Image 1 (cartoon, rainbow, N blue to C red):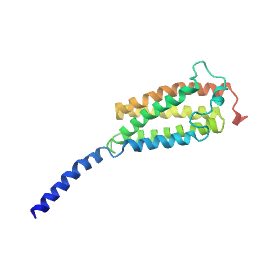
Image 2 (cartoon, rainbow, N blue to C red; image 1 turned 90 degrees about the vertical axis):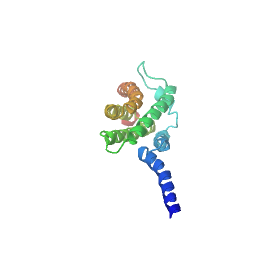
Image 3 (cartoon, rainbow, N blue to C red; image 1 turned 135 degrees about the vertical axis):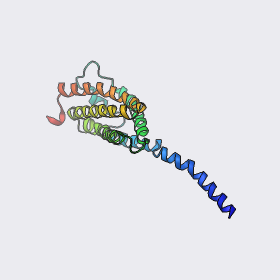
Length: 185
């Protein structure tokens, strides 16, 4: 019997740290990475990973429009920081005020991100691209506001995307207004 008691203590002590770790961090980096990979794969379907530079560049654009080569590195950075923010908040206790709202907003943002290329490049529609981008800015603004109350470091992860979408919304609305949309001719 003493051996059984020692065995039970060893099992309990070896399970406790692991169980505690899982309770503190039920979501892992690779799960966040899967979200990013899935959204980027969907986004890349209509035009490839670099988009369609000729389609983007043929529009009349404002002077502050970023060059086509800037989108991939900027979105890589935005995606990594957004995934960090999402993972950070997802690992907060389920009852944390604002956690659920933040995760819903971030899920919505990933859907908008994945939809942009099919709308803009796939359907060749700057109007739908502008609507998607403006919606992304609205969702990101709400996400940033919620993150500021839920977890300050998560809010810092959303901030670069917010800044980029401020610029991108101006540019996409300008392009939609100043150019004809092949989809809505």
